[in-house]
Length: 242
Image (cartoon, rainbow, N blue to C red; front, top):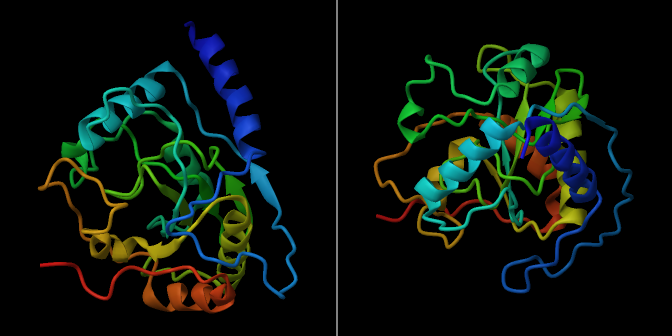
């Protein structure tokens, strides 16, 4: 398929995916989704990153390598939301970085995992503006072991530039929105992903491919969780298995 045709096909799939609800997971989904709290959908601006033939091929190869899938696809069934920060306060700069298909040479800590660039489904700016970078039902490389079931929400900020109250509110609204559209069972921070090892969701074929993360910060996580506690979403297990 020519590049223009695959981009057009992906754009059509994006429009369909963004408007489609996932079937609920009867095994692990919270029993109650509707709550007494008033729900106002957040304002989401679509700022799609590039998905050309190269990026699609790299995504499928990543899934073959790390998940052992013989017939990988772009599709995922979201069950987990992972909150991150970008390690930069510049959202536009982060968008440009995610827009490239291939990992840059400076990302040595994850280079062994393949050439596919990191990305996320959503990016939240310092003022709380929410950008959708790709459909939440597509595979993104953002959290080892969980990419095949996880929606990634990146926040512009770092340890030196802590995330803002506006980002807390935006993340809470986005989590609530996503939990109404998909059978989400878990809400975790990137710093907590290692504690998901041993859970059926966690799949990584390379036992040596792990990183240590601190984002998005304990205070931020606690603040977001407090605002969506009525959803009944689980966190990671208390401790990683031995």
